[in-house]
Length: 208
Image 1 (cartoon, one colour):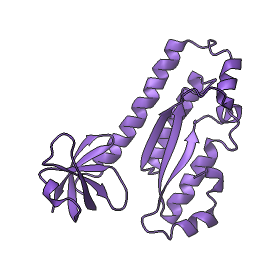
Image 2 (cartoon, rainbow, N blue to C red):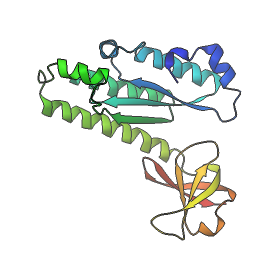
Image 3 (cartoon, rainbow, N blue to C red):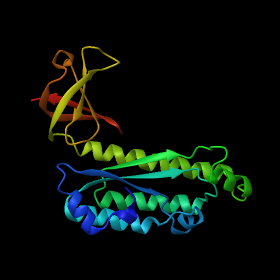
Image 4 (cartoon, rainbow, N blue to C red):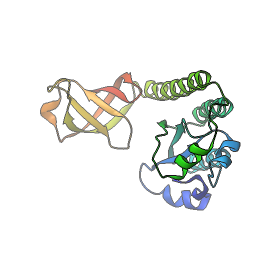
């Protein structure tokens, strides 16, 4: 969803959807960079949308993009700081994409026109790695918070690593769940307890 469309009236209506969860675009934590990129709104609007969503009971995920044309260390620092704020606000997940050039696109033409050597590329890459690490740690911490909590899950497929294990999908939305020795129960809905965080995108559960 676009943050600019997340009015209180709209979100109150959407909150009537059971287990409603939405991804809101932010892309950068810098107001200045957002304007340079031609975005119709800045990160403050995304922050406002998250707060409204919280107030009406909607779960929220937020996505960022790094390596955009004209990116500077200051902008990356602001994105890292905003991710920390989103954690405090209870955002469920941060998705971080890497910008890819698409010949002929507006961003591609902008990048051709800009002098991106003004800042030390090694320094830029160092802060990009910091941003990636912060997003991964954010998601790992959220997965750790799930431990010992119970969820309704559908056993959907066999694990590619061990065909005796099953992969489950949380009905209300969330990370994939590994369930040991459960492939014989594919297609069933079960209640399980999360027992371990495996990665920033994957947890392990135990059928109750």
